[in-house]
Image 1 (cartoon, rainbow, N blue to C red):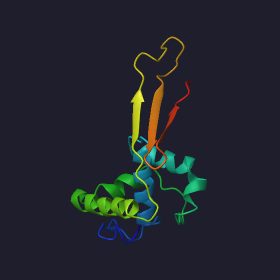
Image 2 (cartoon, one colour; image 1 turned 180 degrees about the horizontal axis):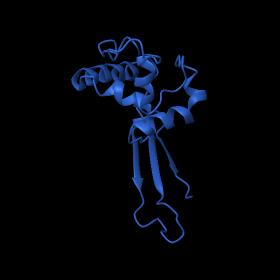
Image 3 (cartoon, helix red, strand yellow; image 1 turned 180 degrees about the vertical axis):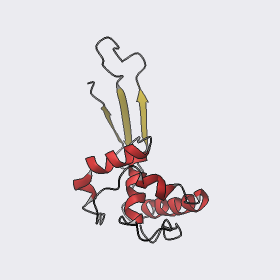
Image 4 (cartoon, rainbow, N blue to C red; image 1 turned 135 degrees about the vertical axis):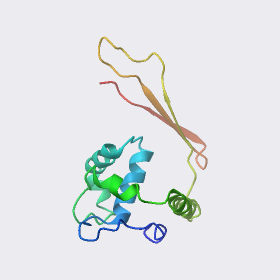
Length: 142
């Protein structure tokens, strides 16, 4: 992955750099895929998935803080990042044995209960082309 994003420049301040660019980019991308909406979500995602992430990321100083993500992402040229991201996705799809799994998500209208403080139900479906089967899951209410 680090070679794919090699065109993406690290922020210019070397003395304050304690996290690897690749670690920050991967956590950010995975957070957005998991429906993260902002910088705090990226930090929270990293903290909640730390045991899993440390299996394939270096994380020399742990998970970056929420204020680190904008300092890294904002100076990145969006066109360069998009090109790198497309190459990364293409390398995964072209990998031997890789399969494309379409994923769809919906929030079920009217499924919330305001008086009881229960949020709406969310449904996620994933279709496996190779297995010709569908997997569905829904978020449980709080």
